[in-house]
Image 1 (cartoon, rainbow, N blue to C red):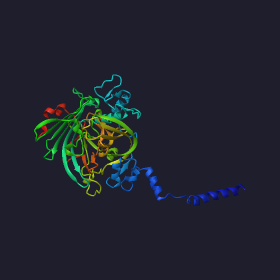
Image 2: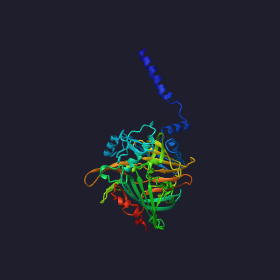
Image 3: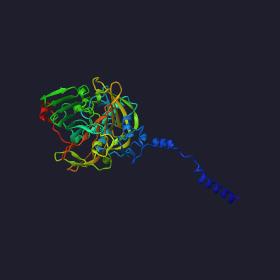
Image 4: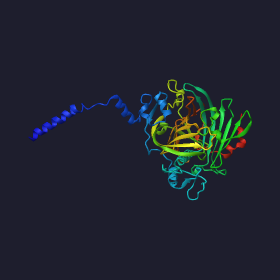
Length: 456
């Protein structure tokens, strides 16, 4: 009897495996598409016009449209939490800063105990962010600032391109210098009698009609002291001061402003901040940086030069076979990352934009998407940038430091209404072009009284 029961049971199971499983209803094409969309794009896949819907909730709408229309195409890479290479000293300082600082009603970082602005800050001032904190947004912004400033002084020859969908309209070369006083490790701190956070000079070297035009900015740490800005125009043969409000205007008539900087370079206290939310987002990354392939060499005068591969297209117009828009980031990859979304409303009503929305990485505080709106609420401009991995570098004396490892740069200010963009970060033609970090500067280099020395 027991044998016959087992025989019947085996027959029943066998019938189910052969017939029941095959008889299960199969998902139709619509259901399969829905399941794929919910799963999202995965590392190794390529996001483009055939699967753009899988990124529908992972990209700003104006960026998603580029993939929908086949104007952008990028591979997805894996960048999980916990693999970012923090500078050990910076990380330790960030941990020490927990609970040490707060912000004033206008947004300045101060010591929580004394209520005074410290002479300098090193590390993330706010390593832990509480979304319920009414000051969470500006604390996120300060973390972005100090993480970026810690990359150190820089000297770059930068190619600016004015780009339409199918071609380059115009280009200019800028010789750009940054000196940072705040946010530096002990080795790089210098005297700061004017209580500055940083100084910046950009000198146009081409085309001929711009050659010698120079812009200088001093940014003060005091909340009540607005940026000092000067320009030198060779045709006028004089240095003149300009309003900080002009920092939102297009630089040299482009769609990129001085307040764009590396991602957002406005003075935090000049804005009112709000935390909009938290999300998962796809963001542009330098894939070679995360694969450990970039090359950085020590400079005889101090600092590091990033050596990028020659002849490899970074943007669409550099690739003759490319069918998308000319400013597309063809060499970049996309990675899925947790992000804060914060908004900044300028206190100056003469500022060009009425609201700026920023997507900031929740782990590394690198910027992702910068979206600028008019005073009536319409989206006008976006700034699109790359994220990088840090790598350990050895100085000639055997000591270590940590810097972003890059194989390219991509800063794209896209004018949404005019369907055009300005690209920054590409290297101009030439041999051994400056592309340098942690370079030493004498502060007198940034003296406004001698700005005309750059004129031709």
